[in-house]
Image 1 (cartoon, rainbow over the protein chains, first blue to last red):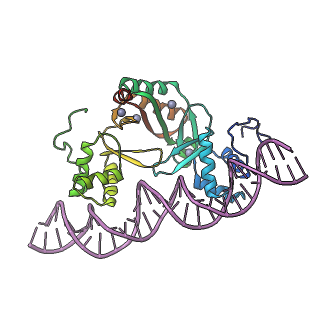
Image 2: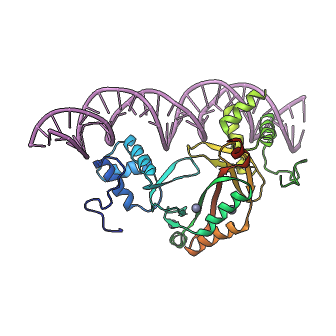
Image 3: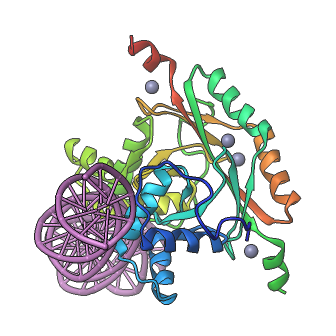
Length: 144
Length: 144
DNA sequence: ATGCTCATGAGAACCATTCTCGCACAGCGT
DNA sequence: ACGCTGTGCGAGAATGGTTCTCATGAGCAT
Ligand SMILES: [Zn+2]
Ligand SMILES: [Zn+2]
Ligand SMILES: [Zn+2]
Ligand SMILES: [Zn+2]
């Protein structure tokens, strides 16, 4: 979709990981998908598409990609983890709770807000976790 | 901490739930604790304190209290759910990642920010999830 | 006090995730 | 091109938090 990288890897990605059929297939699949998908979903999708990958491998590869900062993780209310290809810089997500479509948002104000709240209470090393959920325009329209 | 509701329950809590020894003990325990505790922790604490409650009952009671808005839930990175007694109005938490101490924060700005972000992208029924983590002054001091 | 329900609890079931361990293969030096 | 070597793979077992089952026990209205 964003073009420019279907051939040789343009970014050497010096992650020290080996390039295998399984990891390539997983990464390619994630590039085509929009919202957050669970490891189980991804495993099933790979099988459907004729690129069978062991479930344990899917988990290992996803975790490696998260460690390398190539993926975002988001835990749903029922405890299942969702993964999504994303930009490496700090940002948050606006997720459609109906179709799963995701928009990345990066606004300085909320960053400053979090830092200020922590500082006001004497907290150090302040980090934050922010996610916004809603129903996207398309899904609202589809609901008649 | 925000005063005004430490005495008798001001709201009759018309939840339609029965009052049992187990639920009373659990609620009393939660009132004494500060940070977020897992269901397993709470179960162990109740046993230590000589108020044995079945694990399944702890889970059921916690879920019921969450549904009734008497508790806050927070999922840690490893998928375990933490529960904490909290004020019924909408707010967020500032949690010490070292000692677990929690401060409730309620700031209109971040509420407006979330609503605006959703609206700008055409999302309806916008909700949000915001948590701030850090190391509290006491823990920073204790770290020498 | 009586009865109708809902709550309880011990254990099994569930299910996402992680671990085990023998085998395959990507990367690399020759 | 060839072979080494350590990394990655996969099937199944193990783990561990959470939920379900169902027979028994206890609120609460009458
Ligand atoms: Zn949608
Ligand atoms: Zn941020
Ligand atoms: Zn602390
Ligand atoms: Zn809020």
